[in-house]
Amino acid sequence: MKINEKMKIREIAFRSEAYNEELKLRDKVLRKPLGMSLYDENLEREAGDIHLGSFIEGQLVGVLILTPLTQVDIKMRQVAVEETYRSKKVGSRLVGYAEQNARTSGYTKMVLNARATAVTFYEKLGYHVISNEFKEVGIPHFKMMKNIQ
Image (cartoon, rainbow, N blue to C red; front, top):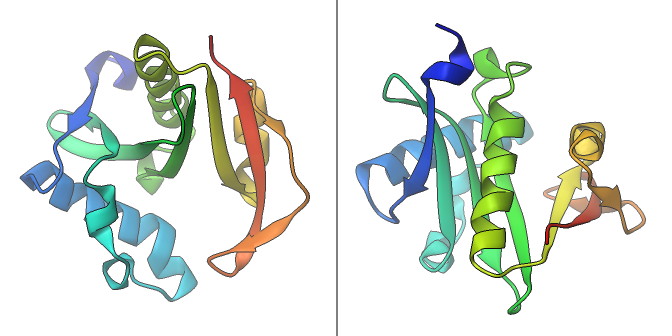
C-alpha cells in the first residue's frame, strides 16, 4: 500500500495529545534548525486557529495551521513535514486538504509567508509571490497568495 493510501488528514484539537505531537514536529522542523524553540512563543494565540495533521498509521508526519484573517481571507502557516516523508506528496496533499477546508468555510483567498526555500513548492500548487523578500524568524521569506474559490 502506498503512503498516500495510508495517509489520513484530520483536524487537531487545541491542547489535545495530538496537538502536543504537533508542537514537537513544528519545533523539530521549523525552529530547532534555526537555534530557536517554539516553546518560547505565545502558543495561546493558536486557540482559535484550525490545526490540520497528516497521519500515517497513527503517526503525525505533517502539520499546518489555518488562521482566519477576514471573512474571506485565511492564512496558512507553520507548515511542517517530517523529513523522511518529504517528496512523498504529504505536504501537497495537506495543503490541498487545507484549501478545501477553507473553501467549504467560505474563504476565497489563502495567504502565507513562505520561506525562500519553499517558494517553488507553493508555486507548483498555484500560489504566487505578492511581496518583496523580507525576514521572518531571521531568514528570507516571501508573502504568497492563491484564490481558492
